[in-house]
Image (tube, rainbow, N blue to C red; front, side):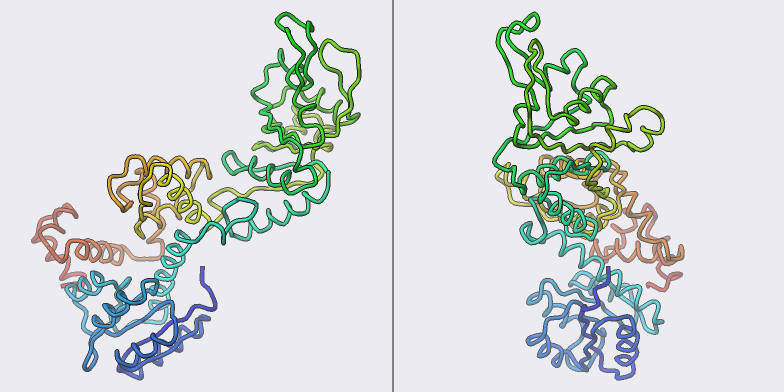
Length: 444
């Protein structure tokens, strides 16, 4: 998630420390500036925007906590990391309470520095994505800006310039109908109808009548003539969703009308001609179904002219957070409520969850959170248990058990304002055990 243009300001009264920070971070591709005092840093920040500030704790005249407060009051989007040669849990609590995202004790290795910097910037990127404007991060009315979706947008533009049949593949809930509509409404057929048809929902007994219509008296109950889907979509587009579930009878009738562009209404012998574009979609592997004899090979090649593959939500990176923000705003507006804000921990959980139900699952979750939420903030405790576990699994993959324990204890103490009695209750241990852990982990 690193952006090579990321700008970092290091603030320390030690030239040696500044040199170490600058050398390691510049080598990793970041743009690094240095200042020797809080006063110098303040003047620099008034002229130059930065993404991250790394500040020493103790410095002459003004200390790092004063810089943190100044940044929090004036530069809301800038991240802060505190470093110090005097590590203490009370100092960490104060720094984190005042707005430092991370706390690193001297001496530190280059690897430790880079790990913390990357962790902070990942949180920042997620927060920015979660609050980005829909108009800046969408195309064709579809929210998303990742490389995979940019490739989808490119194929939509190309497909819209032709009348070729389009095949959209992807897991359930990825937005296949949105893409089909985008192709139609950006093509020369936009003035004519877009007709979605769920192939798995049409019983064989109603098949011909639904697709091709019927004339009055064609069968019992046919009191009037009625146009079918293909005639309604004449000059426009018919979207055959879940075509992988189509019965053999439906496949045969679709192939016939696609080959000849002609059909007869039920109860009529008069041939009708249609100019209808076909866009088909499925979550199934059609090639495998063809190999198994479950889907007609000739129909497969008819629909498979231009393929647009939709990525799963888990493949889309920060698009998850853009979509979450979009749904929060949408459902909050529907309920005439202020849009709730998600904490960093909640955003981390959304970003690391597998999303088996894709965008549909995310949309349903955000709607539920807005409906049942009581306050202006959505925290990780408001999320389903499976999502809370996902962040625990993903966050500490490269840390020792002692490091994970120390991080957790430090975070709990920060949330409780260094109230050790309350922290011990949250951790499920007594106060004496907490004191022993703080001493053993070098936090007390």
